[in-house]
Image (tube, rainbow, N blue to C red; front, side, top):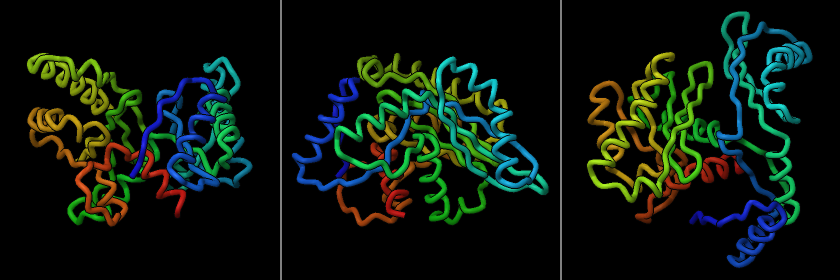
Amino acid sequence: MPFEIQVSGDNEQDGKILKNEIERRGLNVKSAAFSIPVSSVLYKTLNLPKVDEKELIDAIEWNIREDIENFRTETHYDWDILSSDGEFLNNVVVITKKEVIDRILDISKVAGIDIEFIDTAGTSLLNLAFLQKEKVERNKGENNICVIHLDKNDSFIIFSQNNVILQTLDFNASYYENLEPDEKEQEIIRIINEINYLFLTVNEPKVIYTSGFFVKYPEIKAYMQLKFSTQFILEDLDPVLALGLDYQGSFPLSLYNNALSLAYRSIK
């Protein structure tokens, strides 16, 4: 089963916490996959001509020069080719602050864990959604992939169709739990309005995958589906289905979709 730990924000202390929690469970972890929250990442999609890798990197660096300058601090970036369209390539670039990567490096060093790779929470969940799409016959032909993820500190909607578009969502679980039923309804409407704002600029998907705290607050999904009516179908992003897990328990594993999608990629 996945487990959570509470971190302090201090890199050395958090490395010790991670090491102690792993040892306490009798786990032998030599290496691990880490992820960056979407709030710390800038996603940028670039449509560039097909050229050799060096020219492609030069073109990417030229196109993200202004974005890097806007961070006003040292950055790291990485990129991948999403798809090919005639003589052009659709590339996704992710940019983050150096201090975000350094935090992972520091924590892993103190914990004695090698880093296999670092992903972003958004692209990690998109990968999980692509896997689930192929498991459900009616969804196989759908090109637009969209995930809404609600979490303690990192809620967002992410969309992919030869590009990657991300919009953070203002969701506070502690605040939501203390609301009266009528107030909860108004809060869900506010989140729906945030989601609809994204679809003013992109082609609407037929299916939106719901992830994270949707299983903890099923009324959010139910009310969203009511308001969206036939606009979308809301479908649980279920790691048991997507990854073909042999799991018979009742605890909803989709609370830990990000960690499980990272683990799958690490195994592959």
